[in-house]
Image (cartoon, rainbow, N blue to C red; front, side, top):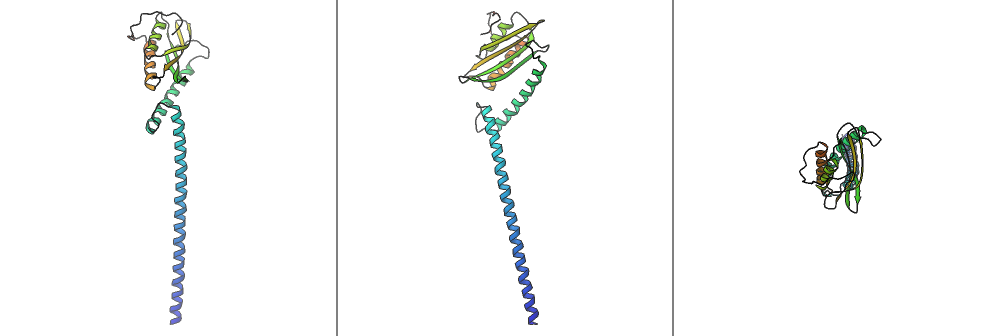
Length: 203
């Protein structure tokens, strides 16, 4: 009888050791999984922060800590770029006007901390076009540093490199410039009150 009890006790001890070993293995695997997850999460955050850092360089005028606004601006700019590419594809590689009315504004860079954009316009030619374009640019306190124009068959294409100035140059000012140029293309009254008629030069 005592021999049988001793055997049962030994078996219970073996089972207990097996259970302890199994529990230890499970804890070890759980710990390893947690470490792996933590490492993966850290790498993911590093990638996200790296992309955000790149986006912030593209939009230096936005608050650096405003991540949602940076992402929203990136999406907006991407949509605008796609639209501009589609419009550019409609234009000939030669400097001739397209048949469609076009207003495209692209960011060129900074000159002496002043934001510079290139505006491409295609519209019906008219005698007041230069004056209207100059008024539109002055409405955002911009100045033209380079201009190119071609008129074919009653249609005119104009490319202007415009400096918006240190105080301006944000998306709000670029948007105002685009709206003003669109009004010129659509031949709507701008209400700037300028009676000065310019030749084929801009300034």
